[in-house]
Length: 211
Image (cartoon, rainbow, N blue to C red; front, top):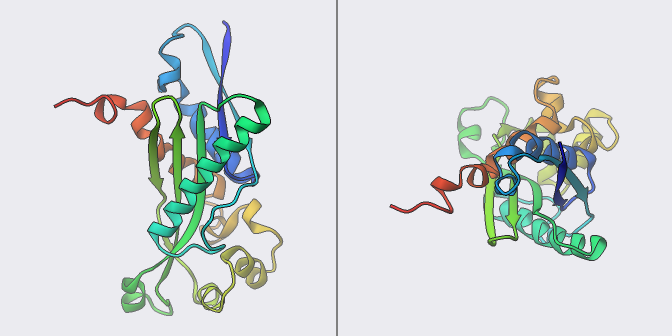
């Protein structure tokens, strides 16, 4: 069977993020619009990461700021791919991790100071100018990490300082350590990416919907 490549630009060179995006795309690629013209062609996914700016603070706070960082990364990844490869990607993806103030944690969580951790993923499909968005699940930050973040540290640096790790952002991350490996950072990214892709593999309920 012949093969055709679905090209994906990722607005990060972090291998955990790139692999999470690629893994999610690979699981749904047969249901994406790119598969329709070639029903007898096997589709493969090629994900290429680019070091781009998010144009938001290094530690985004709140859903709006974090989501905007993901959008900016997707746009810049699209542009970087065009320059590097001489053609447009089929999809451009931005991944941005952030923190949210959560008063419920402060009111009901013993020893917690009201910060939860989450991520946003933005997916741009240039053919049609379509966007998809996914938000991860959230989990409470421990007091030691919260205190460091509130003092001005980025979460990744706070994690490495407190847990005596090195470059945890490119390994299991905070979610991996706090779930004791039950949810790796790659899986966390993969699940969020799958949610962001929903409008693309169910276009009849989104882009093609007519009531």
